[in-house]
Length: 350
Image 1: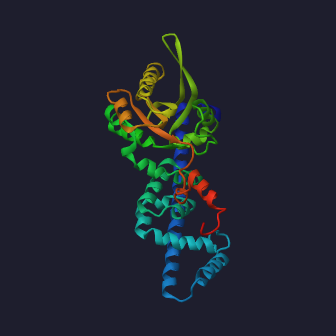
Image 2 (image 1 turned 30 degrees about the horizontal axis):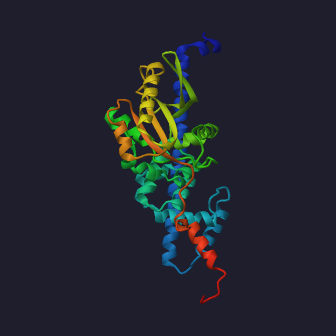
Image 3 (image 1 turned 60 degrees about the vertical axis):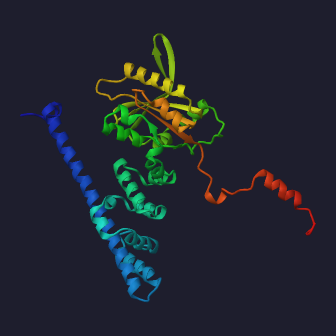
């Protein structure tokens, strides 16, 4: 009779137990999702009932306060029936229809994600976009907040501003995925740098904040190194930053420029991509992709530079700090301030 040790060493048993473990994990995940869905639907129902009763009665604000107290007392082991949370449930029922809850992906999100979406986004289309991306990429609540605050929806949706040759040199599926990876601009607002910072300083700081930089790049990126050395015909060259993207199955070469884009920058990036394809790319990998991130670029010049290139490349800009808020856009100039100060000591009527 076979003993435990023999079973442990058997390839057939290893395959057998692996399949059982996968099935158990699948069932656990399904159970968690089912429970979460029930909770989200319950919260919508509570919010809907409260909203209806508020319209029908004259109880006013005391309705939510008393409802929260009674539900908390009745279900002491269940958290989530605070006055604030029930107010959020009411807003939830007003922000999404029952049909959306039943048919759309929102019921697969955690309650914390839904609160963020309700508090930060008014547009239904934008909200649905973030719902889909949260599920596709497995964003935590804090990552969702970061993506919203960095304006990811606006940057991704402005596809006409993204400059690349992806559609000309890649198959459609990979081209679409690569185009989605490209942003304009990339926000490096987590860096404490001046606008005049040099390329190496920005690169070094990005390396120190690599987790945040990867978040800005998107999902599927694996960091290979900075100032990555390649040898071509006995001469060493160094790539600013090298990544591998598991979704695209491609090496990603990133070059940083703290100046305006110049046509020769595309030629240098093309050289690096050809070298990586020759030296690192596996036969199962797709062609390496280049992203040149510069301080600024002329759209026409960039398009001309990429025309005729056979290696996939995209050109984007970066921004070190967020755009000035609209209510601060009309700040007075230095000249206006000096003019005001020069008249501040004059007597009225002079």
